Image (cartoon, rainbow, N blue to C red; front, side):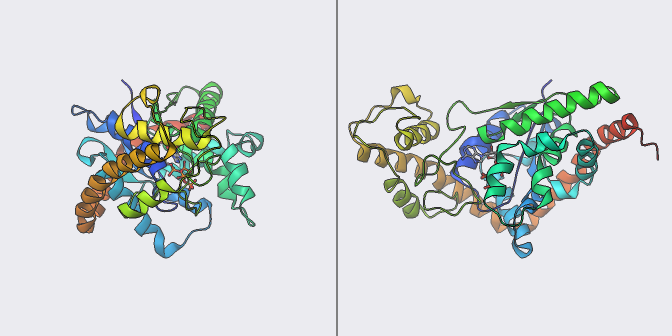
Amino acid sequence: MARVLSLFTPSGRPTLGNLLGALHPSAQRLGPDASRTDHVYGISDLHALTTPHDPALLNERSLELAGLAVAAGIDPARCVFFRQSAVPAHTELSYLLESTAYYGEMHRMIQFKEKSARQEAVRLSLLTYPALMAADILLYQATEVPVGADQSQHVELTRDLAERFNRQYGPVFALPRAVHPATAARVMDLAEPSRKMSKSVDSPGTIYLLDPVDVVRRKVMRAVTDSGSEVAYDPEGKPGVSNLLDILSACTDVPVETLSYASYGALKRDTADAVIGLLEPLQKRYDEIAADRAELEEVLRAGAEQARALAEPTLAAARKAIGLTA
Ligand code: AQP
């Protein structure tokens, strides 16, 4: 049986890209009959330490993201839902995987190249981030990882590390694969559609999940479109328009091929309506969840207990296989 896992990093305010690329697809995997332990979701707060962060804000960001994940349909009653930092096995297995991985393969990761280029002082944890992500996945014997397209290289590396470890030391890990949504696997920035929408890049083209609806409408109406006036799906030649069509399709479940518009203005109006139609109820549910902070903390605490129990046998097997007997 498949075990599905996805974690979300509190590195900024969550975006429409996070919702369409990962939160919704993860929630959709949680059918009504999902058994609790076959779905493992959580907040990867340790990953938020890989780039400059404000310690005073980290827990706020974690709780905000946890609340939004639950509001988006990740029901903690039907999955293991926890904070990564509450399960020390993640960092321990990460070290064993760092000792399996090569410097060259970490250094080749596109996300490392992009993020390190934006910083003066690059944290070592940004380079080793994929080993911790591999530990997140392998610790739970996850077989499917619903993520946006930007994370597929890291999941591929996870699979390579698992295969190498199993070959060198014995069969410990299941081999995972990334699963991407059919549309909006890579939501682009509305102001700069050649770049992925990211929570850690401050841009007028980022739609934050908690943006007031008038702000959302303004951002969509000001989205950069392309030369010419024809509305056609052509991600290479018309990245701005294609991004809006992708977003509209993902928000309405209408296939991109069947969307037809006579003008950019009409497309923007419908896209704004569709995004707001998705965000308004999400924000309402979030407000209710966020009102009971103690309850959310308790949900994460109980989830961490379950996660520790699930992770422990795999960590023990990995330690034994690699030769640690103490
Ligand atoms: N623009 C996007 N389109 C589709 N999916 C996206 N994801 C992120 N951006 C987009 C997916 O959201 C999930 C959560 O990812 P994460 O929080 O662990 O970090 P990330 O991939 O690095 O996301 P961000 O928003 O870009 O954060 P920063 O700016 O900190 O790097 C993942 O499944 C991701 O693919």
